[in-house]
Image 1 (tube, rainbow, N blue to C red):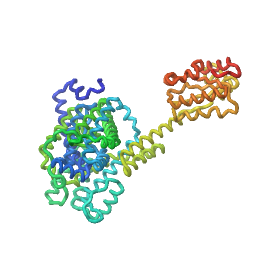
Image 2 (cartoon, rainbow, N blue to C red):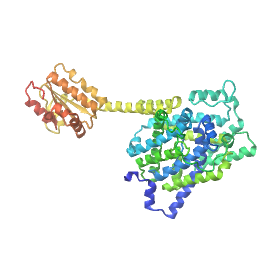
Image 3 (cartoon, rainbow, N blue to C red):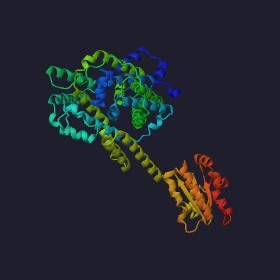
Image 4 (cartoon, helix red, strand yellow):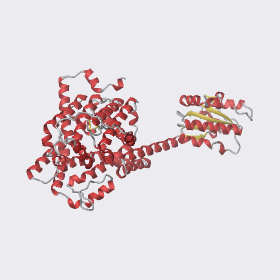
Amino acid sequence: MHRFIPKSVVCLREGYTTRRVASDVVAGLSVAVIALPLAMALGIASIPAGVAEDLRSLHPWLTPPAMGLYTAVVAGFLISLVGGSRVLIGGPTGAFIVIVFSIAERHGYAGLATATFMAGVMLIIMGVARLGAMIKFIPYPVTTGFTTGIAVVIAASQVREFLGLTITDAEGALASLPAEFVPKVRTLVVNLHSINWSATAVGVGALGGLILLRRFLPRAPGALVVVVLSAVAARALGLDVATIGGRFGDLPRTLPLPHLPWGGSSGISLDLVRSLIPEAATIALLAGVESLLAAVVADGMTGQRHKSDCELVGQGVANIGSAMFFGIPATGAIARTVANIKAGGRTPLAGIAHAVFLLLFMLALAPLAKEIPLAALSAVLLMVCWNMAEIDHFRSILRTPRGDVAVLLTTFALTVFVDLTVAVGVGLVLAALLFMKRMAEVANISAVTREFANDADARERDGGRPIKPPSGVEVFEIDGPFFFGVADRLKDTLAMFERPPRAFVLVMERVPHIDATGIHALEELHAKCRRGGTALFLVGVHAQPHVAFARSGLDLLIGVENLFGTLPDALAECEKRSPSPRPG
C-alpha cells in the first residue's frame, strides 16, 4: 500500500524545519496571488449565463466567480493533502471550460455537480486499479489536438467581454452566446457594431500589460497586477465597463456548507447518471492526463518522483470535495505548479498554504474584488488560451508522419466544431488504429525456405550448423507480435502453393506475444494442413505464446510432439517422417 500513501504524509514523516516551513508558506502565498484572479475568471467562463441566474435564485452568494474560488480552495487543499506529488498545485483549469460549459448548459447545475462527483469516483477507481502509468500512454497528437482546440473555443467565448459586446437576437432582445463554435463566431460578428470602446480599452490595456510583464518581469503575478490596475483605472476614470459586482453581485466571504451534489428530496436520478457517463469520463480523463503531465513536469524541475496512482486517487477525492462545496472540476495546474517550484515550494505544505491564503483573500478582499472589470478577466483568459495552444508544438507535429498529423487535425477539428467528448474518443481510436497499422507493418510473415538454397546461407543463419530443409518442406517465419493486425496474412499462406507441401514449419522465435486472433489463425492453419495432408510444426515458441497455447488447448490440437525448440530439430523430424506423412 506504500504507493497510496500521500506525499504529505511522506514529508511529515521526514520532518519539517523552520526554514522549510517558511519557504513553503511563502511559495503558497505567491501561488495564491496568481490563482485568485484566475479562479474567478475560470469560474465565470465555465458557467452559462442562464445557469448563473438559476444559481443566484437558489443562493445569492452562489455565483460563477464564487464557484471558481470554492474550487481553488477546496480542491487545491485536497489535491495537496492526499495527492501523490510534493509540489503539484491543483484547482480549476482552462482545459475544463469547454466540457463544463456544455454540461451546465444541457443539464444545469445539478448535472454539472453530479458529473464532477462521478468523475471523482472514476478517478479513485482508476488509481486503485493502478492505471496511473497507462494514462501516460495517451498519444501526444491527441493531447495537443484537444488542448489547442480548447484554447480556440475559450478564446472565442472571451471576445464578448473583451470587447464589451451587447448580444441581441433578430428581434433586438438581449440573448446569450450560442454554445457551438460556428454559431458563436457568427453571432459575435453580427454584434460587432455594439462594441464598448471603454471595455475594449480596458481589455487591450490588460492584455498588453500581461505581455509586457511576462517579457520583462516574468516572476511578477501578472494576472493580479493587471486586474487591480484595471479596476483602479476604470473606477478613477469613471469608465462604463461591466464588473464582477455589476454582473454577479457581491462575492461570498465564507465557504458554503457541504452538500450532496444532486440534492433535493427526490435524490439522484439514474437517468441523469446514465446520460452523464460520457461527460464524467471525459472530465476524469482530462483531470488524470493534465495532473500527471503537470506532475511529470514538476519531477523534472525538482528531481523528485510522484506516485501516479496516489495522484489519481487524490484528484478523485478533490473533485468529489469540489462537487460537495459548489465547485467545478479541478486538476493539477502546470503553470501554478511551476510558479510554486520557482517560488521555493518543495512539499505539499505549499499547496495547502496556497488554499488557506485563497480562503483568507476571499474573506478579506471580497468587497474589493467585485470592482474588477470583466474585460480584464477576459484578457487574463486570453493569455491562458495562448499558453494552452502551444503553437510551436502544434506546428512541430505537422512535420511528423501523415498518420500523426491526421490524428492531430481530427482531434483539433472535432474539439472546435463538434464536442470535446467526441474529439477525445475519436482521437484515441484513430491513434490506436494508427498504432496497430504500424505494428502490423513491422510484424512480418515471410518464407525463409530460399535462405537455405546453399550451405553457406544455412551456416550463416544457424550459427555454423549446416541445415537444409528436405524436399517438399516449406519453412516460414513470423517476425514480431502475432496479433489481429497480422493474423490475416497467415490464412492464405498455403494457398500460394500449387500442391500442398508435405510439411509446413512455422518459426516463431521472434514472436514475443500472441492474441486470440493469432491463436484462431493458427487453428485455421492447422485445419487446412489436415485437409491437405500437410504436417504442421511450430519452432521456438516463447513463454507468453506457450501459455496462450496451453490455455486455449492449441498445444494439444497441434500436438506437443510437433513443437520444437530449434529449426534443425524440426527439420530432422521432417526427415524421419515418411514422404506422405499422416498429420500428427
